[in-house]
Image (cartoon, rainbow, N blue to C red; front, side, top):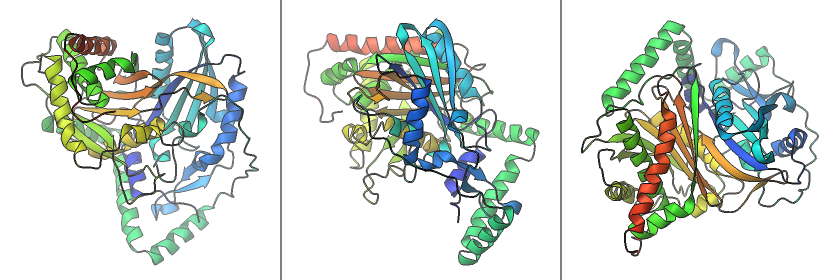
Amino acid sequence: MSERLRAADLAVLSAETSRTPMHNATLEIFDPGDSGFDYDALIAHIEDRITFVPRYRQAIRGVPGRLANPVWVDDPDFDVGYHVRRSALPRPGNIDQLRELTARIMSRRLDPSRPLWEVYFVEGLDGGRVAVLSKSHQILVDGIATVDLGQVLLDVDPGPRMIVHEDWHPAGEPSGASLVLDALAETARNPKALATSARGTAGTVARTAGAVTGRLASIAGALSNRRSAPDSPFNVDPSEQRRVVLVRTALKDYRRVRRVHGGTVNDVILATITGAIRAWLMTRAESVGTGRRIKALVPMSVIDEDLEPTSLGSQVIGHRLDLPIGEASPVIRLHQVSYAFKAHSETGRALAADRIAGVAGFAPTTFHALGSRVAVDESQGVNLVITNVPGPQFPMYMAGAEMIETYPVPPLQPGFALAIGVTSYDGGVYYGITADRDILPDVDVLGQCVREALDELVDSASDTRPRAPRGRKK
């Protein structure tokens, strides 16, 4: 019998519209060197590694009459060439052209009749570099049965790997009659499944009742969110178009600030974001008076002793944090953020950064996807979703080519015009900022403010005598 979608998967699907496609993306930049890394090499590499994520060769099929939740089935027409696509920038391409291309790709929904992922091989970057943009639907990644494709594509050294020879053939696609019979049999064995399916069906009907009804519902959700969260320009229902901002900073700067002022690198990153938002709002002539705060949802990794060590699915929970944008002092902002997170770490469930970074493969892609799934259920009453995931502090390689930069590209949830993702990797801290193209046309300024806010913290550390950290390290 085919595996059936769970209630959590249906919740993600119910939140998806043309304005809020529920896919995460990661933009990675590579130096091919003499590795021969090109489009054909990427195709061959994915064909080899997709063995480890079989869900990426499956599509969703509904049950006639909606008698049960949809099921995962092997795509009988699976073609890796359809999912791995070739693109190019006019040479010599720069980072601004790359992020414009990324924004256009992020604006498009995945084809629901096929496996829900795409990878773009982008040529033409200056210096002979190439980029790989991978986009996966959130329901593909649960951290238990399936991780993100990006987690299995990267290696810790450039050497060749033994090819996994798999003579894969899709299982026969079940007929409508067999799907109905399976649903009836499952209901007989588990009557509660019928109630679960009915709730899922009700959500589907409500979602597809009509464009007008859907638009009114999304407006109502956005208005409800604004009523329960402090006023901000972020809580607006997004359009179908996106802007993407990419910011690269140095991890040594965050460590320097942490060494002088205490706290963790995570605290310094969030204090940097707080200072950047404050400065950005000031450029918009918006009030940032004393005491003003915005509420952020920061999905955090935790220890769950009931799970196997390789299971990540329940190791991410939502942590709500007030960002003190009304505070003028960068040091006081840092201490306030650090204090807010101290209670979280003292619960004993906080997962150490080195444990996350030590998960097999390139775990940030999976943790960012899991954080976005958490935000679907827990973002009510907040202004902003921030995912921050530590990665390995050594180079990683794809088919022999060294990855030199990596940027998360988070999705926009209903009622949100801005989302921020952060990944640390090999001495760098990389920000990926997604915004609505129409609502926040000046989001590029926020990227500049991130650098300035970090400089402000580094300057404060330069003027202060070092003292011992306050017990927490990253």
